[in-house]
Length: 128
Image 1: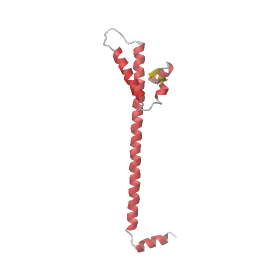
Image 2 (image 1 turned 180 degrees about the vertical axis):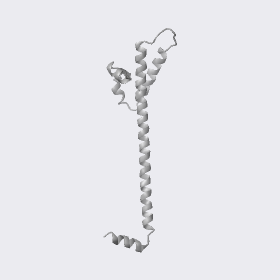
Image 3 (image 1 turned 30 degrees about the horizontal axis):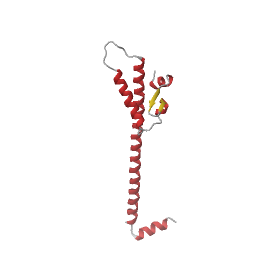
């Protein structure tokens, strides 16, 4: 079963400093919201505490659920990081494009300015 399907079917909830939230609510948290990072840290800590080495003891449903919750939070964080990186790259491209447009405009002005007076008058009269 896909992890988001299981999370919604089983109605996973996550404890944050200001209350309990659903999987859907995690998407609303911003990357700079410390609660998102703290949630990942606390889930990771719980997993490490539960996973003491044993060659006999098998994983319980609680272990599986905790691992899945951690994977969900990591997935959401990684997706948000990727989206942030894509926004930053888009922003850089837009800034570069604006700079290039400005330089093209300046070069066109230079080209027009380098024409002689007669060439400028001839071109001007041809526009009528």
